[in-house]
Length: 337
Image 1 (cartoon, rainbow, N blue to C red):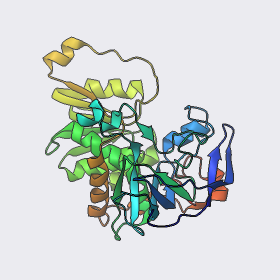
Image 2: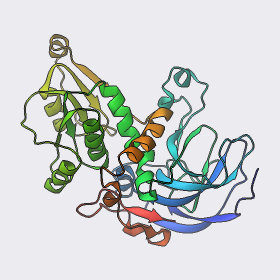
Image 3: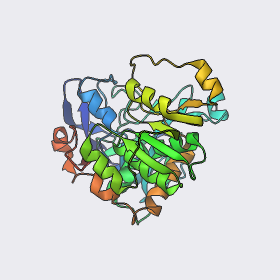
């Protein structure tokens, strides 16, 4: 190792009934591994679903997969440099299996995920609700420019990078009518990104306050008419069916929110054929999307009030206060370990 890491750190361990802030050991770093001090973590909706009992997760475990940190120690062979401010991918991949070699590393045959691994396994410090996190070999790391505040950079590791993947799946957007289902952090980011890409963007959400917020990021008034591209971040079968029904000839539907079982959706194959429709899904993202996320946020930092979407951070000892839906006008709670 190029630096001596701390021997212990603080971590909020998910026990199945709550989060227990403990002092835990920091393991010795292996080849290619990186130890990062977590500067700030934001709370993704999937973690809210876990603590609310709507989603299963490894237990005990350290949750959290949206964060920005600082490199404090590296294992042999790592390209990371001490002192770098970084974000990291949700997925950790082998880089060698058939899926990795074919460009689908997000579905690596031996994929592991930040904030999703068992605390009692071989990667206990896997989540960002801790003062330190270990990033194994196979984690994509992106350096954060000095121009991006921590509160803007942290969501890039999940929300923004996922949006970059969905835009790639959607194809060319210049001059196209784009429908975004859901105006949470992903949907709002997609509104801004699709608008920047030249799309005529409208958004659907049941929350009137979020629709007002979306307008500030480029969403126009929807007329309920045909669209060329629809991107769903809600996972609602009803919302997906409505979006599918609005696709014009040659339209594309990108599904990103359907990550838990739900009511089946009826799709008429004849309609898909006669209207030249494309239906595709995106789950997780590729390394290029993480780097694009940082570039996008930096490029638009003066155009959009990204920092205003995140609450003031609470201390790790107060993490229970952050694991709840954000207040009106905010889309992410934050923790400062």
